[in-house]
Length: 305
Image 1 (tube, rainbow, N blue to C red):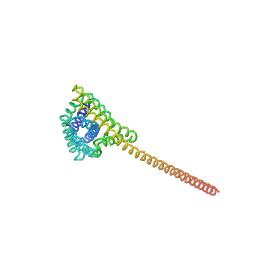
Image 2: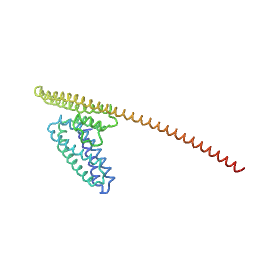
Image 3: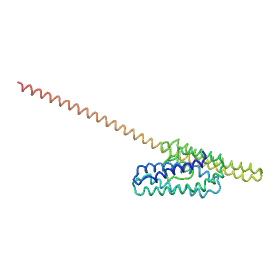
Image 4: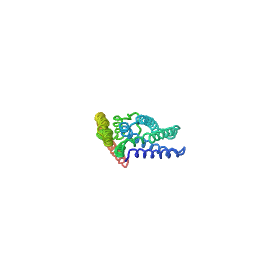
């Protein structure tokens, strides 16, 4: 799917949720909680794929978008903080609806800015093929994107790749997170290298003049080489971080297993002791009952005489 179409579809989905929240009555606490959770999930995934792929690729390949993308990152940061506060808030809290209203206003402003200023420039400078390739990568990233806000995590590669993978697949912190982190870093940087290479080739064909295209081709090769170098460096960083996370996860799992075994052993010992004690008490009670029965019989015999 075209990357810009994908993001616009996300915007439409979130806007429908905003309107649903706004239509909920003052006492519709259950409805507001349900809608707020869906908004949190949609915005968290949307922000992740923009920060991991769309913004890095656009900043490296599209002219004149540096300021608007940096502003977008700051707007994401604010939205994530508000989402994190809403995540822990009871809908009956007097600040809940007010906080969601502020969130909605901020996101609507962000959407207008992206669709009016950023997207037209991206569409003008990236070809249809590149936008489709970028969209496909973003769709793949969405499948492992976080569904909760993480405002303290980095929002640019490679830090956001590793953090996003760990948050999105917390139950697979080991090899799965490592593969996801490396794949996402490589994906963003590979796309940058290919898009710049494609553009330099297109410029050379259009010019039809070797001398006039040399500068652009050289810049394209240099940028592509820089991107590959960055990819290699970022991948090493991501891999190292993921390995540490994996090692920590294995140690935690090992400690949990040892604790579980110790607990199970203690439980078995306690059960055995309980059975022994119960058995002993039962035997004593049976013995006492037999003695009492014998005494009763003797008294009955004596009385009959």
